Length: 226
Image (cartoon, rainbow, N blue to C red; front, side):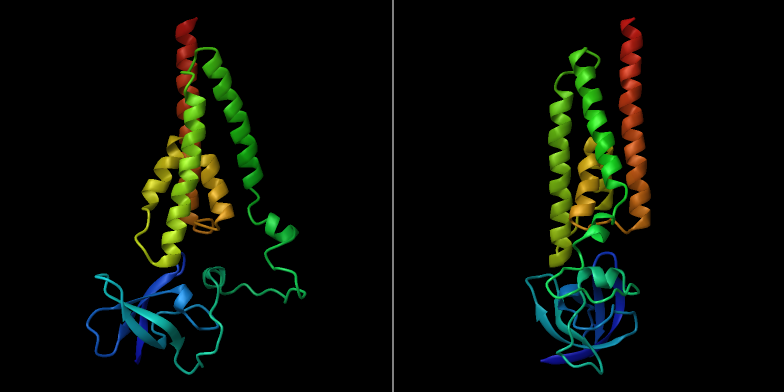
């Protein structure tokens, strides 16, 4: 049964929001995948929707359509909701907008981060082979980076399905412990947290703190060995 209400909350960077429905005491959750508008939702916007109940998580809205629009309007993609003002020319038939040189330039910091990560791996290998760090540090660092990518992937999947998210502090913790290279790869490959400025500032801080802490440790051990 179709109901009407208005959008009372919209988290553009996370891709979900809530609707205050008529005759419903609890706000109704909806995800960007279930939104049928031609542009991003806005707070106060009137919508129609179909309400369902999933387990004990409360009501969820499906087929959310702005009032005055037909149900056949194509919903925006996740990227379109996060960047509603961006308009591009139509791509030629058979060519994806996400392919080509422009897609490769989306993150100018990816290649520098990977280059620094390669140098950092060489430094860890040298420190381990000369006894300045335990020999297990480099393999552990590699495993930590794989785990960091997996955590980002889980959080992205949870965001798309409207499930419980991984706290941002946890993502930053794995980056601080040494997973910063694969954190950057995950941000680019999964298009996750790459446009949130506050998250990016904290990410760069974790990179600096990690490299500084390990470099200081190596320096102290080297001085004691003299």
